[in-house]
Amino acid sequence: MASLPLSSLSSLTGKRLLLGVSAGIAAYKSALLVRLFKQAGCEVRVVMTEGAQAFITPLTLQALSGEPVRTSLLDPEAEAGMGHIELARWADAVVIAPATADLIARLVHGMADDLLTTLCLASEAPKLIAPAMNQAMWRHPATQRNVAQLASDSWQLIGPAAGDQACGDVGPGRMSEPEEIFNALAQHFSPPVKASGEISSRAPHIVITAGPTREALDPVRYLSNHSSGKMGYALAAEAAAQGARVTLISGPVNLPTPQGVARIDVETALQMHQEALRLAPQAALFIGCAAVADYRAESAAVHKIKKTDDNDTLTLTLIKNPDIIAEVAALPNSQRPFVVGFAAETQDVPRYANDKLQRKGLDMIVANDVSQQGLGFGSDDNAALLLWRATSGTEQLAAPPQTKKALATLIIRQALTLLPPQPSGALS
Ligand code: C5P
Image (cartoon, rainbow, N blue to C red; front, side, top):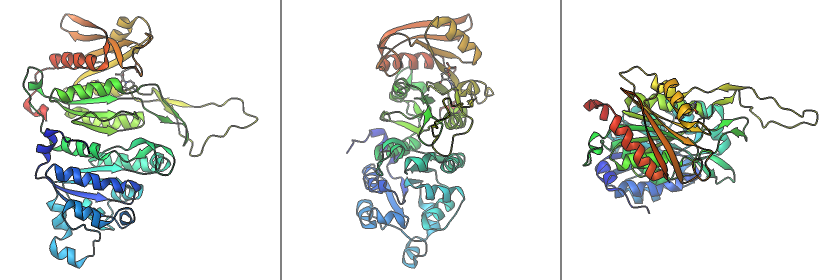
């Protein structure tokens, strides 16, 4: 089992967690999650849906949590002990892992047709949810509408991750690993850490976008790009190491979540846009490192697009995605973070980067020449030109080829140096 970061241990000690488990094959991972929470000093009470009990027994979770597992709303014996409203009030946080498509749909509609949904409706505690389902079910517009609704109802989504699925499919829908779910909760309860040193003492909340986006054409195809997410993840790791509170909005990538970073997985530009605009107004610094698809299909086909003998061409109508970073930069002053963008150019880097800095209304831009062999997309190394606004015009710093980790240190330092002094409230 992964060792726990000390900061997580202290932020979770004594917290009362209600863990909801629904009917997915990933339910077996809830056992590990209970252990992680217990190790961190939490009190854990588990509530299982009826279907969840087909995947893992209440006895297993009872043994690990040290508390009776609740499975039914209409259970006179359990209600005589701690009634469901009392249980809802008891919780400092509700975590659901795994959450099936069905449970998510019921939560969206405020249903209270079993114990878990009733508790979610009755509890005013923060709620985190880790979806887990087949990739086609996850991609279905109904599920996508539902998770967007949950996010706007203040649920914090964790994952899902992409990869091999128990059903044999490959794609998004795997439940995030227990360590990631644990980290998201620990992050939720962590006050911004003020470590020693010039940079850390400013400890802002930093929101970072990373990775590519995927724009569905039909249930099996999408438009995307080669972004690996490595640069954005390196920035998130560095910012967290500096003591900042970091939220990483990530497109589909194959990278572990850096320690101490809260990660929100998204797939499409519209989802990234929604999360970015939800979080940016509370952030002191926003770094747009994602390679967002500029266009998406006007409508994704419900069924796989077939090739036919009489059609040698296929016309797709694409529509422009919102420019996320430009919208963040255009927020009113009271809500606007310091905004750092990225530019991948193949020629005349300073001119194009400066143009992008002005056009998108950014405060700083990190530009790299992606035509250079061994640097940029997918690689571990990068070189960059940092440009930022100064009273005297635009200033710049050329960073020679180096690891993305080293470059991330440089970028975070430069951005924090330029950050206007934070009112104390902005550090939350
Ligand atoms: O316009 P271009 O894609 O070159 O701009 C790159 C910068 O803009 C990056 O910081 C990227 O994260 C951001 N961007 C965005 N939303 C888009 C396109 C780009 O936030 N739709």
